Image (cartoon, rainbow, N blue to C red; front, side, top):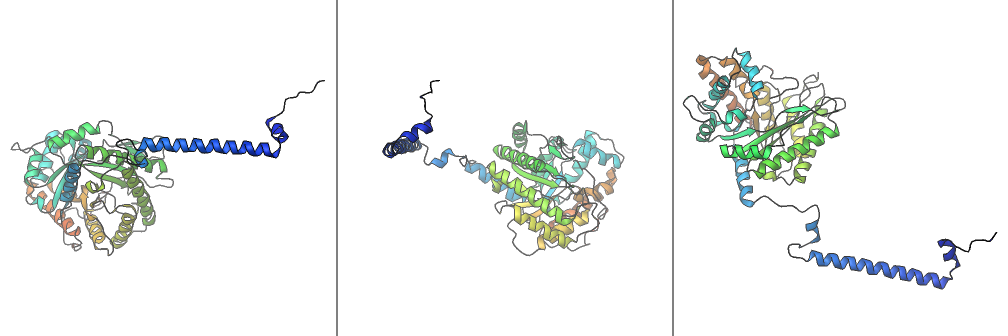
Length: 421
């Protein structure tokens, strides 16, 4: 049988003498160098086009900054909220949330009863002495006092900055271990523009994070970070200062060490995402949890231990460019929230931000108990509010003395599992 005369490439190469192989290798090398030089020249010419100063402008680090005037507006608002000795009053309960409180005092959950309660708060004499800003709910933005004055107009006259809760509450994070995600991004830009037109100057968005045996998951942490970053970016585009609220919940029996580690991981993820979305940090505020043991933990921590753990977590995760941090109370009693804030401000060491409060339940528990839905108790209820705002104003400076603010519900727990506004 006649054998094939075809040779494989390897056989052909072996048949070549050393001189021929050397010539071929030189030719291949020359072709490679010519091709590389041509590509480099083409790239250099491209990058010299008008508007393309460096190659880095075409890479992922390129982005557009906020207009300088808008940056100054956001920064000015953030700094005004952080006025010395003042904090934020959170009055952003949903209609369902405030309905439970109204039911506890024997009132129906009607628009007028909700308005009556909020008017009680906003007409408190000397409220602005220790309150710089108020977080409103959508309905409240459009409500008025008995004499027809819009709430936002009233707050502006008091030099209290109005803000708005813009998240649409939580829903289950699919295929997770009872974790949550927060809704409301779809039409956020339009809503922010409308709220700005109504007179709001900042916004707030809460993302709760649960601690469990296997939680928070990486997916839940990344979801929280990305959602908060997108929210913050949209807010700033419409001229609102975003308050970023990653809330590591009290739910669970974890100790303070576990709470600190989870808080550090969550904060690191959040600020990485804010950076990725080019959020102007000087025009933002952070509203985090204090680092405390879980509600079911048998080993309790002192205010000083909570303060050290909280300050450590913040130093490890929050950039110094952030102007201030306004803590949530997270179900602590009124007195606990004040004592812990006071100790956080007293801890020695680096403190690149102003540390103050953004409390809802820890400012209003005694108000609800005293008011009890009766007009004749209105003045007494307002005095209860002033007690707590003054106490926390002092605590934001590290000047509060334990037990000096005796309020009606000061030592009663405000904890609620799976809390929703």
